[in-house]
Length: 417
Image 1 (cartoon, helix red, strand yellow):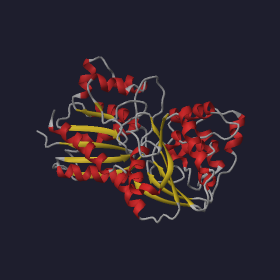
Image 2: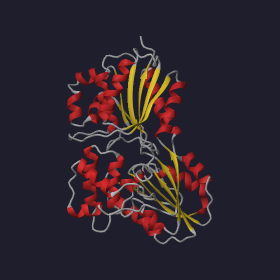
Image 3: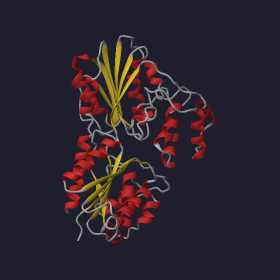
């Protein structure tokens, strides 16, 4: 394995390690005074790691609780907490089961009780109870449309929250008069509390008119009965919630820059809010890579870093994720370049409905694909980046990491010829 590949793996591993939620959760808990009984609830792809840290810190103060995370993301028992794995990105019956277990506790809490509520990315799918008159299959069908049309996470959650009995601040209302101390690991650009996990303990900043505009923008097909729920307004004020944001994509980029510098690369964080189409970001990365030797501001060896979350318009029937599609799109543009590598990875270790974290390509990848009769344009049209990258050993694997602070894409340029 070349030095570039070894260094890329080091950057990925160290950036993720630096942004694990345990220390941030402990720090947040240390800033808060607890007076009554404490109930611990955690939802999201990083729920297990966050709950494990909180349970250790709080010890005997914890009177009970529930953890809901994605399948294969639990790492074992946490004290007396009940741990449930459920569907992501589409909610399933286990989602409803886990959510109801939380509500069975929350609805009977009193003013002397306190909830520690740990939220991470994926919470929208993993914490759900449909409003009366709406079925889980209704929500699943709408979610599939939203995921396929290329809507961003704020737009997606703007719709999802209006169909839910626990999103858009409604969970906080259920817990009242108990107090809620919320610790959030942000996977939403700009750290919008009403959008992270669809804001179960945050006042909703969006309006019914904005939600209707999203429906029209993407020509979403909704039953008339569902449209009626979209028109109903959501809670705009909550009086029992205190929130701390414990991590975000900017920290991921800073960690990547620090690690790259320690490996001898001059880092440049280009942005931490990328949110374009995945393949367009791939094309952009390859264009930047082609200009490194011509740019006055970039000198080899260097690392150009972007953080954020892209979107994919699903038009094909293939298998992949946004980071894999970004890497594959970049491969065509850097064909033939020497001592250049591009990778794109999800900090949670699972990119889309796959077991890969993302993809990693260099100047030889396009040729390797061509030798296997794989055409990049055709693969992108079919959204089949996973199988294409797998064929040339260009997938990135980390396994579920226990954190979730968006994605990172990096161009690594070595010393060159």
